[in-house]
Image 1 (cartoon, rainbow, N blue to C red):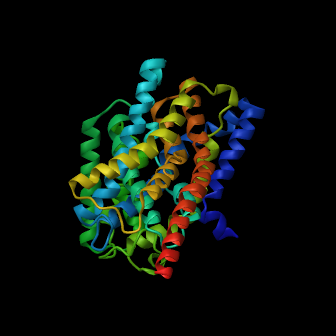
Image 2 (tube, helix red, strand yellow; image 1 turned 120 degrees about the vertical axis):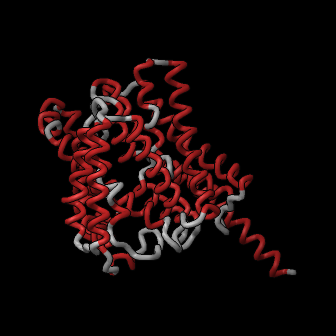
Length: 383
């Protein structure tokens, strides 16, 4: 039962539902509890969420990984870029034409894809072993990797201080390199040493400190090859990076529960233009961007995995339109508060409508594909 809850990020859902319910019953009481959590959850706790995402990105670039060569990486990378550029363009166009202009800062909110929930939907839609599942995971990982860059570059958390950033970050990276060369196997030394310095560098440099462990992750001793995305065998590997993931996997689910509770409490009366813009950009822009750029990537030598049909690609795009966790995080980074934050947060939360949309679409797309295959088998049997 516990494994079922953790594997499906149901603690995050529970925290989110609790926040929405309480905020709509008594917002002032909810805010009095949730507001003090923002710093500890968003700036400290989420460090480990992004570290685990960075770990999957880094391992995918190792020998045997899906991103180990340019040709292997091109197709999901193209899909990820399309799934970010098109939603951002739709959001920006809606704001520019319908206003208010104050919402323009939230252009990156619909760029996000929630790895956990998108993957969960894909596992329901597609049979085990179907190439659409790892393709979606790679798309989401690449999406989050690009999202981390966007977060660092376009959403500084304070006035920028490159002196603090460069000085402290250089110390963090040199210390991480020193630990690696000494074959230090305790991940705690990487977290409390260079990780803390990196956090200080980002915090005092004006960037979001939740990215603190992203540059430190590659220095941790790791397996020489990638076994696969979220492969169960990783839990038995003795290297530092996999022990780090194994130790933090459950605490991160608790952190996500607190993140949902601290950030998702939006009264329904605060639904507005920002809500509709985020929703439209995610639900329309993601599927269109993923499909179009995946097809365009073929012009540059990218190949879709064997067995991944065009209809499957549409379903992948719909599943990827669940922004949720990362969209909420981008919203809190884009807007300090007020109606713009509340409206865009609600858009991120309502992106969950992609779940029934994906399931309904799959009945038609996957059902038609199955009928076609059955017809082909019957035709061959009679010949």
